[in-house]
Image (cartoon, rainbow, N blue to C red; front, side, top):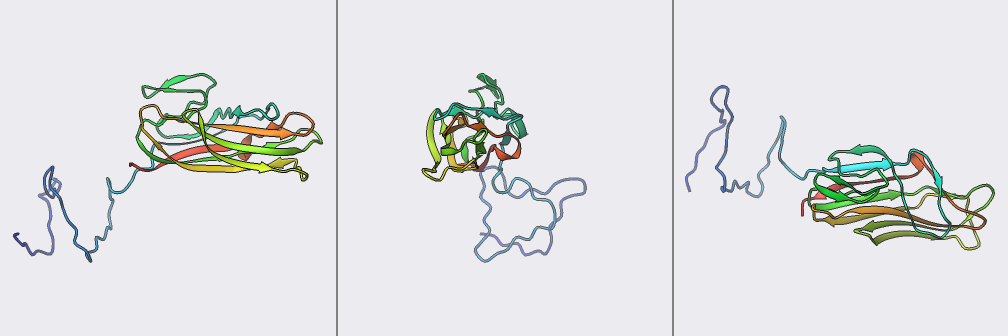
Length: 202
């Protein structure tokens, strides 16, 4: 191994400085420190694609029936991977079912569901399920059984880290709620929000 001792390396004027070639390994030994005072690109994980969506208007759902969350208002959608419509569409060459996030980049994603659900009029909720579905099957649920202590409004939260293949895996979000004298109300605005972002490429 050859050793070159210098204090500074500058590229020729108007050019860039390249270390190594394709296939080479550049090793930073244990105990060494890299200090960056400029702009670093291409390091670490990229948290894209990501999305966040909510409801443009609230609506009633049938008591005790699992109901797909119709989050039709996009807050963020970095890669155009969220389908905010009631029908299946093609996004980035992939089939995206109704109200689904179908990322076209493989990796692990943090997925969240903030679920605002209330009872109508003077009735009360007796139970609420806030569920994340992956490829049509429930993978995470936040369950509240209120029993003899019913509430008029509740905001359960569900989240998960899910591995997507980037070629068609998708998530959807479902609410199941029991109203003791009618049908529950799925709240809009900031009460109900869904989203996901990539946390790792593997």
